[in-house]
Length: 545
Image (cartoon, rainbow, N blue to C red; front, side, top):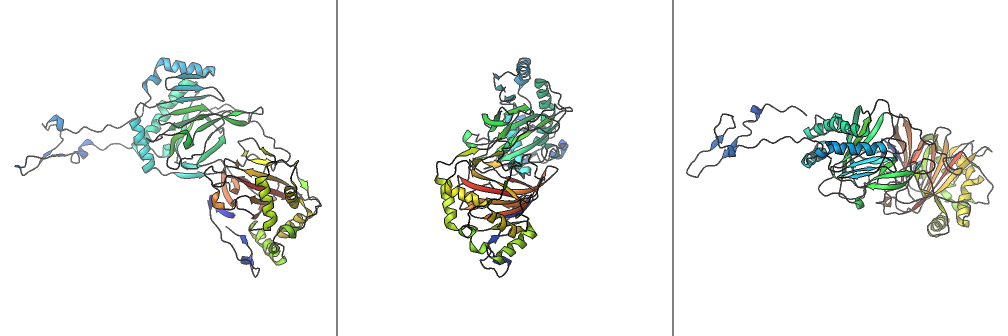
């Protein structure tokens, strides 16, 4: 199902009736995609304590809290002290600092009382019970929940809620101002002492992960970031591994690319994690799978004036990948379109209406495009044939799904794939789009993909602007779109790191989605909360030359 989007908000379209008197008659889906305290005297009257007297007395005595009042000291209310964050005392002791400094510098693993340094897959420090007063964190958490506005962040790499930078929230509530001052002064100084890094300033925000939220594999390398940190604010219900949301650390393969999760760190209240930002610091926040818990944290970076420069390994895609420059010419195949395609999509009037719509919108979704019987045969074969060979694509910081090995295919799959490489399909697409797909230079490439929960395809560093292409996207094995959470394919513009969604395609069975692509394409993370546990996607990209 295809949607136009603006700022990532999808809208659902409506089906058209099946007749060809006008454009609405075709069965395609068209969707347009702290502040100072007041002087104490101002509060005196408010703080007046009323004492009841024996019933023989008809009046009330007001006990005014002037310093000169000679009242019983036991009757004086105690002034509420402002809670302030401070490091646990033993963290500032010389033995503790020396142990941390020495092991950090030597890149040694270290486990102490409420402290740990991990040396592999990259250097990470874990500090339990960072602050000496958890009551402060309780008040801080309450302020974040009740007084801070969170904005949903949704791009190819992540989906969660986030506040603005804390420096813009310091006037909102005292605990927020206090934690911000603590982070940029006390904590940054302490981290600088431990690591030996010259840290200059901080950027920090509050992140809120709810059910099915996530942050996929990345290294945090950007501009002058030097140390990444996370301070967890989980509530009294605590956090379990089964709730998801762990910070996962990745090892690297022989090519320097991230490959396997080798350590998972469960969120714990009042726990600090920090690590240097390098070309090895690949990590992610696993999908939150708890239906009734919030993963709340303050996270950000300590920056430096002159950050070290790292060489990031270049990824070379496989030759038969959608991200390669290897294309196939159309070929002569004994294929009858009428055996595969519904008659209404081969009708000349329908073809003209489809062409007009694509010319105006650069996209169209043709519902129930294939005849049921052959399409079901293909879908059943994909789901039931245990001899099919699937291989994982890599690296995981770019995409995470499986593709079919094309060296040995059952006849029904081979015939289905031949359909999209055939002269007949090139000709039909030429009629639909008026692109020069009938010429000898016309070519195509494709992938038949298997998607399971946890799969995704990020934007990557592929040169999307090298050439404009015509994309066909067909889904199999997902009869109800509502059974799939995530896994939608989006076409976006990318200008100065801003992604504006243009078109969204929902995974829905037997729709032929046609998009003339002059922008980038990615597919969102397929949530583990989905009822559907597996579906298949065929993506074909056609080029005039």
